Image (cartoon, rainbow, N blue to C red; front, side, top):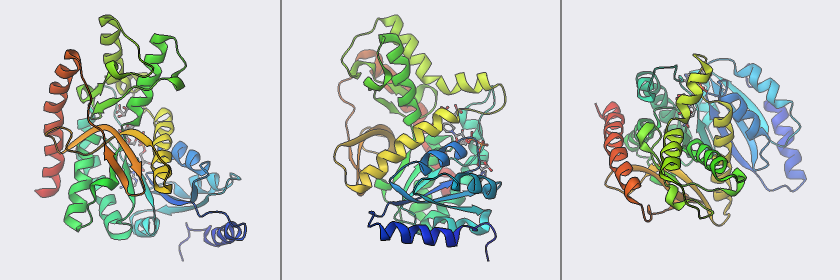
Length: 338
Ligand code: NAD
Ligand code: LMR
């Protein structure tokens, strides 16, 4: 018997209750890396999401405590904990959505690419589990460097014969969340009224805010454009430096991850017009992966939107972004192919 899966029976009861009430079945969601700085608040927020009926929390440490804690919240989702590699398959079986915030975070002075050596192997192992146990699941990848970990996931799935480009999504939502916040500050608006498309990837110059397409329509001075572009591209570093060695963004990331996961679940449910930015396999540029706005539906990414009109500043930024992205994608692909 699995000592950490202590809530199995209780779960069965809850599911029975749910069926008795005639409640529409929700979705089954797994968080891999659930005991971490992102994982814990992310798990808490997913437990609060009415679209989630079953929440599996997997990590290599501390899941019994996190699971016991979160399971006491009086919301509908049934929570189960899974600890260590030997429980990965149980954690993944039957999942509709798998969210991956597993892996080490940056310390001051590091780039996201400096995390590659450790996180590439972690993402590879987790994706091998997904290919085996829930090949139909939508996968949200948060682990850095996202520009490389998404190509790694795609290669693992290709090797296993389960790759569907519609179902593998790199989470760049935090860049959008930051962009909305910083642009709203400059414009003196409520951030909830602001929509800034952020395209490219998720590291430094590959994070490309398209300020000429901000909604509501507005204009910026060149000084504001320089300030906003720099702040959005370096938002992660701003947090890493402020945390001074204790990690990177966790709370804003959990918020962004849940906003994105909720969009994926609404898409799975069949809601119309669910559109968010994400880093996906794409033909929008000559690169095999690129972040743009995408429409989410029952199959995952159902439509990828073109970049739209860019001004000269944005076109120059795009060239820089593509150069760095190409190298990061190649690095991820080679890690699996070698
Ligand atoms: P953390 O160290 O606090 O937590 C990571 C968790 O992953 C830990 O609990 C650890 O035990 C777990 N873990 C390690 N190896 C594992 C494995 N093989 N299987 C399952 N779990 C494993 O780190 P964090 O602050 O939560 O950040 C996690 C990752 O998310 C980092 O790579 C970070 O750079 C990235 N991140 C991405 C974004 C983004 O916008 N995409 C934003 C913030 C952080
Ligand atoms: C972020 O943007 O906050 C994350 O990618 C974490 C980091 O290392 O900056």
